[in-house]
Amino acid sequence: MSQDSRSQSPVSNPRRPLRVVLVYRVLFHWRTPVFRRLASQPGIDFVALYGADFPGTKVVSGSDLSGFRSHRLATLRLPVPEPTAPVQMPLSPNLPLRLARLRPDVILTEGGSNLANDILVFLYAWISRTPVVWWTLGELPATGPPSRSQRIFRWIVRSMERRSAALLGYSSLATRYFDRQGYPKEKQFKAVNCVDTDRVFEEIRRLRDDADSLRTELDLDGKFVLLYVGAMAASKRLEDLIDVYARLRPRYESLRLVMVGEGVHRASLQEHAQRVGAGDVLFTGQIIDKVSAYFLLGNVFVLPGLGGLAISQAMAHGLPVVATQADGCELDLVRDGENGFLVPVGEVAELEARIESLIRDPERTAAMGERSRTIIENELNIHTYMENVVRAIRYAAGTRP
Image (cartoon, rainbow, N blue to C red):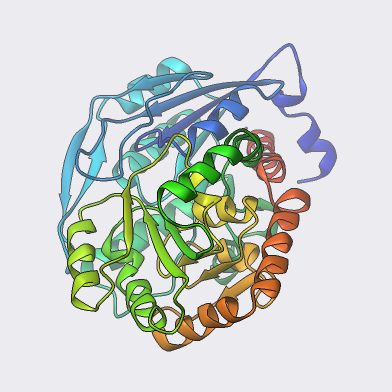
């Protein structure tokens, strides 16, 4: 498709706003700033459709859904067999009817994670000839042979990817996956996963004094703080970080580990910390409002397992990052040896060595943290993120028959 033909899409006509309908499992609190920005884009009429919360998990909507139109759908929870643990998948039977009422020009859908509803989205899109933007992390490296249900899942996902008007990936890992599948380059877009960096910078300015008080309150004055912020789930491999801390702590008296977050795995992590002699690990629980005060306590941010968004958040706070396999964004955000280190997942000895090198050289650690902040300010931030999301939407609009 030529650039000229793309420029004739409805989004370029101020008399006809482009109606973009988002279909997501829930409206996660970390995604709502992006949705507000989409709703404020000139020429875009944005509506979000989402399902009911999954209590006891992180699949819950944020408390503040202001700044954009949204509709909560009736939701069924379908059991999905998995070798490790049973999971549930949402299904909103009235989704096609809601789409028919809204008559979107483009549908932006959460790829893979919302598979049952994605099937309904593509059924509606096929009947109405509506272009779909498939928003996805691509495919993470496999940890073993796929189960039968996983093979079926991947077959369905690839069928939808082929039928999508545009593919919007979270990282270079996603675009490499698109290339391996042979998808056309022109329909591939990359928006590197990040938080609302403008909001983070404002919060840093507002909470810097609070962080100083918090540091004293938590007895962290003069300490070198390893920091983790995020959900506490088995996929995060937080035992690896606790094991590293337990080995380093006797050698570095000023070292401390602060873990911010909540989840079903927290109790077992606390028990594990006691078993390995790391009983002074500080578990704060979940902090959402004023979380910048906790990021400002850190010297190094460590992500030993899956995740992603917290990397950009830590970098905006001027922290070097030590990460393993996250959601793919680590390949774009963490420049190995420049603003942090990338470590193979499960390589605990290497994780320890990289962290120790930062403890031993605080000047280099501070310089790497400054480089992190520069990358966010100049290269990968909410503005570059939104630019590429909108590019994908506009491209998809231009493919509509």
